[in-house]
Figure 1 (cartoon, rainbow, N blue to C red):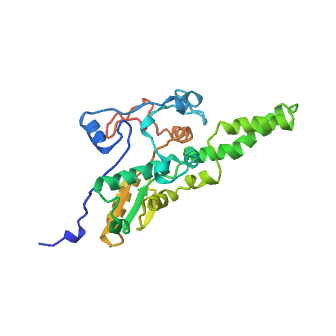
Figure 2 (cartoon, one colour):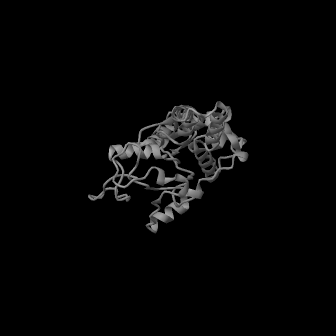
Figure 3 (cartoon, rainbow, N blue to C red):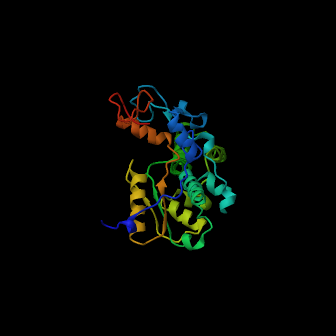
Length: 273
């Protein structure tokens, strides 16, 4: 009999935040009790600005339902030595992934094991989509200036001082964009930030394999362990924010469910959410 013990991989800790589930235990309980965590978009999503039933317009979406985290999307920047103003304008994926990584290390008892942390890898699956932080940064620059240019053409009577005040008011409604927030907009900093904040010295990188990203991340983590590049690996996926812009793209593709329901492997399924 072949001895394959050297290739065995043990899953020793888990953590997650999913719609209707603040942790892995609740997620499993929701599965057992057949909980449907799909809901209408929350008020802060401002669906009325973008939603139009059966629309074919390129600036609208015909679906406003999905798996929303709501108040479960929480992050304490002070506990990780991060300034709060850096978080507000950054991509939520950075901080949700950091929190889940710390929780997973706590779950397996490795958070304070320095020799283990020195050889711990971080491999995260994450789609390179248009998300909240990048959309806000684009609005702060190009969109604000475009609005002012059109306004000046339509109402040339506005003085420079009045236009400056309008610009300030528009920018005040948007998340900040500055040197502190900029690192939270670079996708590949997600794993680097996790390694930095949790003192992990193994390899770290992102995987984008579309809907298979988290599964491929787990596969790559197993390879890293088997090749001896690390002794422990944090592997998983993050997609904590889906902006209306992405929903518009999927609406143009006809990929979203018109019924607002998921039906995986169901012959009546009409799209994703």
